[in-house]
Image (cartoon, rainbow, N blue to C red; front, side):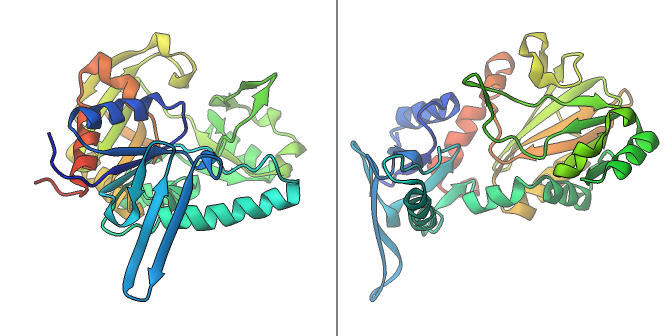
Length: 322
């Protein structure tokens, strides 16, 4: 049981089972936790912060209906998936103005806490979520990448497919997209040159050479601890049917381990969920890294202690092990 009174801030939405697991682990260790969601501001979430005069760092507090956190005394901030600022009681123009003030005010304060370990810092998450930046960093760190094209030119897309086919299409990012009130995702799918029409010109698209694979690998890096799981599914996109999965813990090759840590260092991250394909010859090909990726579903079938590892990191409030 810890005797350190400094709290861990957990910034996420109400429905986050992954955060629930981590919070339960921290509670079991006696670590104080303050959970909040930006979407609760200003109805049930308030903040006052000050700097200047005899104060060289942000002080003040953030408060929920049941908890108060001293901003100058937060040991770690676990930034997961908070909902956005919303002001439904205001007209659209005033709501936009209020949301921007909240983002740069409350959001800016939470991104500027002294002596705080961020897992991960929200600004760094934003940088790493750009797929072009992630692919460039992956190449610089030594990962093997599939040939990739990002374009809105139909002719260039057709030429790429003819040269590198088979080719898959996937979105650069997936915002909330509802059909009859149900959230939708966009699966990874193969695309032929004759399917490319002028609608491609309407926005940017990502095309990537399909990699011959025998399995997929999800690697979760938590601080300096690396948890790699082979996923056998027989699917092009393993996310489309979890019932087909078989999971096996594996050890990354040394060059992949070095590249994983170099990638996180490049973006200033301490957590990352990496996806790779595995070829019959044993080659690992980088697909992407999600700085806020899911991992908890892998723990029960593998026994990998990822919840404990994340709680260790947050409890210490530092990247370094004791």
